[in-house]
Image (spheres, rainbow, N blue to C red):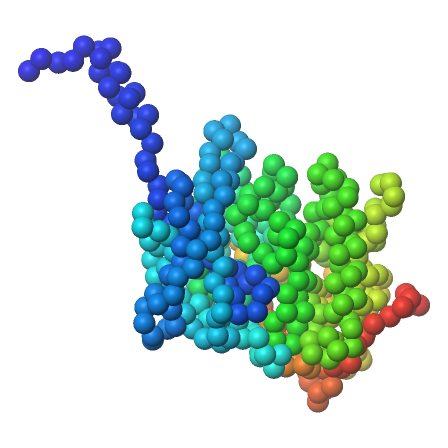
Length: 455
């Protein structure tokens, strides 16, 4: 047999390697609630341009009896390779609240697996269930397998991921982000995956976060709010206080939006329907970690604002206190910490016997221990007066809005037991129980708003 000359052989190999694969198969499928009644938004990716179609139908009925079309946009990772993918978005409308649907997404060039979801129950008496966590990466995602099993068991109506995804989505020219989105598909293709940005999304002006997710409103996922059951949930970005190179105007625009949103949520007719106001954002106002982060400082940017900007940037603690925010969910610290009701570094328990019965200030939960390559953070030896319970176990939080007066939380430890919490309003007094650490309490259904700071 005659062998090819070395030069010719090299040319054949180079030419063969230069042919890129065709990628029309949908991947990274996830759903989110777009904030519009009777709807669900499906998002996925393909390597090449295709149509954006979702076929769906009621569970147990005729399969794929309905079809919806959307659009796609090119997302370019700004790394050295300038890799591009197509992000597809299709909104499903006219869904029956509380009804289970099956769906697949894609086009005639390729369809995804078959997934299912339950359309959001829009009744104010609905008792929704959530998984809540932050700081989960592609590497060392300790909570992922349990979250996958929980989702398969139908335990949640929504997932709240409070910033820091993949570690980091832009790395390896976006391949880490691709792999992470594939990992969470086992959760997010079945349950609305609601998000807020963290510091690990900052590359290229948060382009991966803004491009990959699909949240309500028109702020590229940076801040938004939505209603579910008896609660008004507000998601916002703490990162506007730290990445001023992307525009100080974002900080002021967000603050003004928050003020107006809270004002609207506190209109008597709105607060009567949805008495719970819950916020979620990445960097906490308070923490007792030992890493020197913003939350360890008395002059926290998130809590009291920044005086080194022109004009000075307002913080958020006073705003949230004035408008009676009940619960503030945070992450960033790779730990779990529950605070007593706190405002201005002072504890305002409902009573000495039952601190979470009608608390007089917001309750803070830090849940950033779902697992990532940076492992755990540590705590200072002696907790602050406002710190009620803390743990360095890997884990995540489960939350249920039971009704107008009761809100229940438990911290799942991937290492041992769990912590339970219940915040109640105008209900018989409860007690804080203990497993990893069990809790219960109440809060009045009436508004807790303030026009000035507490003494």
